[in-house]
Length: 137
Image (cartoon, rainbow, N blue to C red):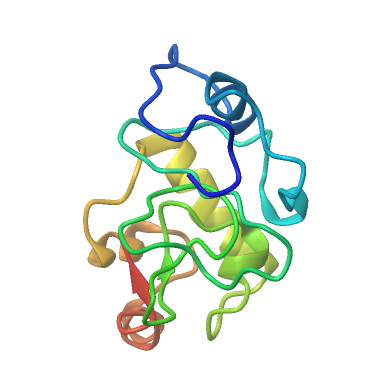
């Protein structure tokens, strides 16, 4: 989605990465801004990857994991698609907690509810309360 040559559904083998998905979508257009897209990240079933153009803000509603913004129009961050840098923008989430969220996703697959953040090392009830209105799945 975004700045790819053939947007739409692509099928990938297990263990595929964002780079594989972009290649399957015909590659990126010349004006694609890949600075915020983690090409090495493994994709999960059902996610949508957004490749922005320079200066594009956010991602379309319903975007699953992927590229820039990793959020929704209300400014919430999608915890299934956010990069470590995007997660670190959340209150109380630093480098270690962001890495723990990414590790949880890698081990367990996508979050199905915001409340699952409680299962991540470093996120207790108080931190979850701070994050609940700022994130989506």
